Length: 210
Image (spheres, rainbow, N blue to C red):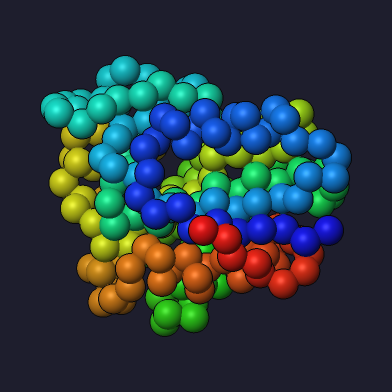
């Protein structure tokens, strides 16, 4: 069964989150998997394990408590977000397998760009020289995944100073632009999605819909 990839542009966080929930709740056993690639306007999101002390000074940026795992993070323009809406039972992936698949796709994509990155078992995401470049946060419901990954491409990193990113005080954040890579989030999506296709065991050719 072929899957679908969608580029959604810059879209509101909460309405996209609710759309993921509806998709997951309404899908059937033969519903194709989808990857939603997009950007969000500035927003802090609080995972189910978030502690209030990690939200330091949000200021004028909205804060939304959501149903993914993990702690507080930031989304904003210039960041590529990819939401894998995948039937894990059909793909044969466990939850840890899914995290590893997302991290592995990111690391392979970055290797293509000449950026050497690694994952950490104790703190999901992808790191370059100890700085966090991409985060991973997921929810599994009815055997299917939503939420996903966020890759910092070319963004204003100041809002990360208003939180303890992912619950780690002093964690340094980086983006591709500061590593010398010039891409837009849409261009990054086109190059990253084929790696996700492979690691998530999606079938058929990459089919993009807008």
